Amino acid sequence: MAQWADLLGRFGGVLARPGGDAVERGRRRRLRQHRRLLQAELPRALASSEIYLVYQPKFDLRAGRYDGVETLLRWQHPSLGQVDRGSIIDTAEASGQIHALSLWILGRAIDDQRSLLARYGSLRFHVNISGQSLANDPFIDRACAMISGASGAIGFEITETAFIANPPAALANLNRLVAAGVRLSIDDYGSGHSSLAYLKELPADELKIDKLFVSGMTSSNRDPLIVRSTIDLAHALGLRVVAEGVESRATLALLRVMGCDIAQGFYISPALPLVELERFLANAEHLKRLNDTDISLTPSRAFWTRAEVESQGGVADVLSTDE
Ligand code: G
Ligand code: MN
Image 1 (tube, rainbow, N blue to C red):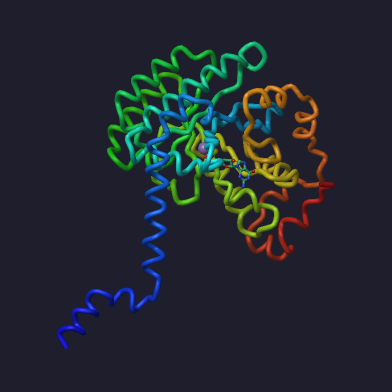
Image 2 (spheres, rainbow, N blue to C red; image 1 turned 90 degrees about the vertical axis):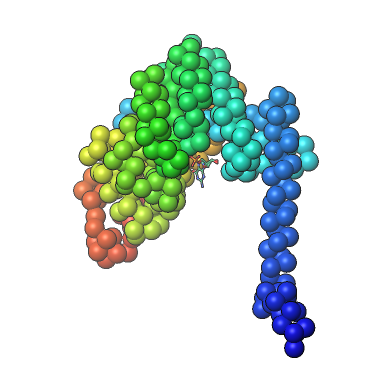
């Protein structure tokens, strides 16, 4: 009897879920090994050209021209292939390398911005910054010094993690960045990483609506209502609105009618290496395509309620485009 109780105690979990825990343990072990590998290789990869930056254009819907670019990190590993951006950031955060990585990204972005100065000097370069770095005074000192030497405007995209560790310290640092000319964007708004509480506190200039709500906007009944209300809320608070994940002409047209300020997404352009970004910016056909508002949608149509949208059978019905 004692033996049986002992066995149950030791193997009860496994008996209850045959194989389940072993599978989960295996998955976690592989994840840890993967992270350890990335962690060990990060410094080498930064010094080589395995890690590089790409830039996704942000299009100003009112002015009809490009407003800036978002800087995104890529790691083409020789044996692992393209490493997921989230894993790179998680690894750098867990191993104390995040400040060095963010400063490397900022430095590279400033260099690339300078190389575009002659033709595209007005483009603001936006960089994603971890909440850990925002709470770190030496990081902020270094970032402000670098930004004071930049040839153009810089923006930081941040999420609520900016506030988690030490809210007063983070706020003081954000205000220092703003004083240094940095525009702050609240990233991934609505996806669970940002909340209304942060809208009240952050000295931000811009709100980025998560692609979760934007990419399906013309095929969903609720998403367009959420997007429109968020645009109104942001405007009431004096924030500019960026919609990310714009994947179609119909979505761009709808956002324009709703008064959205800036659009970003595959329909405008995917993130591009610097040389391709330059080629994209110089191509007048793209600007023509993005400014083509020849779409049958009347402004009043942007102010539906859920009941109206549902009774019309969805937003797609009131949009007619020749995509
Ligand atoms: O949340 P953040 O702004 O960091 O996300 C940027 C990511 O979104 C990049 O990895 C980029 O490749 C991806 N992305 C950019 N444009 C689009 C788009 O139009 N649709 C989708 N699904 N993803 C996009
Ligand atoms: Mn971002």
